[in-house]
Image (cartoon, rainbow, N blue to C red; front, top):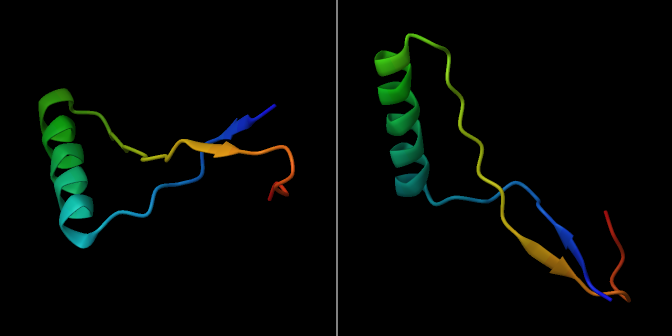
Length: 51
């Protein structure tokens, strides 16, 4: 049986900048401190050790 893990995604510089721009736009629109977090879905096989 495989488990699912969600480690923090490693983003390329351009993708990270887009995410930060979206955060800024959401802050301006809502007046709230918005922080977006990117996770990567990872399947962990039964034999693989979990960290």
